[in-house]
Image 1 (tube, helix red, strand yellow):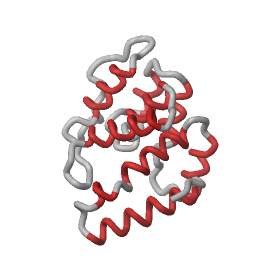
Image 2 (cartoon, rainbow, N blue to C red):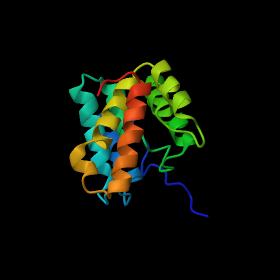
Image 3 (spheres, one colour):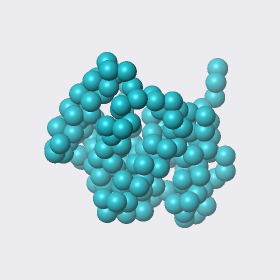
Image 4 (cartoon, one colour):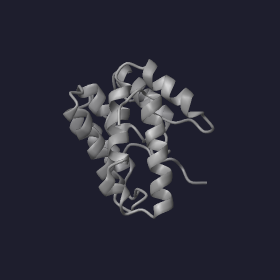
Amino acid sequence: MTETPRAPFPLPVPPTLDRVEATARAAHAGQTDKAGRPYAEHLRAVAEGVRARGGDEEQIAAAWLHDAVEDDRLTRQWLDEAPLTRRTKDIVLAVTKRPGEPPEAYAARILATPGALLVKEADLAHNADPARLAVLDAGTRRRLTEKYARMRALLGLGE
């Protein structure tokens, strides 16, 4: 059985964004996206998207960690014990999809969690980037485009 990776070092109290970024990069080391690119590129793009949309440090920290629990790169226990703010943890948990969860329930949780919508908006924007999708096969590109459009609609985000 493979053990879920743990952060290579504990976060300082309070953690800096640089250390949160380093932890996220280490947790996702070796992981690639659907196009075969290093996953850290996606994390960086989402964090920068949050920053560009006026997000605060708690939201930027959540952006760096937004897929860590969902992808089993860091454990829920690690997140619970990390010296992050409650708001940052809540945002990470809000954007973490649960197995078998209907998209409507997922969207409702995001909308009910202060700060989570901005993180998910930046995530969807990068996921749906035409240049990123262009390298995928037509079927995957179509499926993902429809999936992201549906989630944007459920979240009340425009085209």
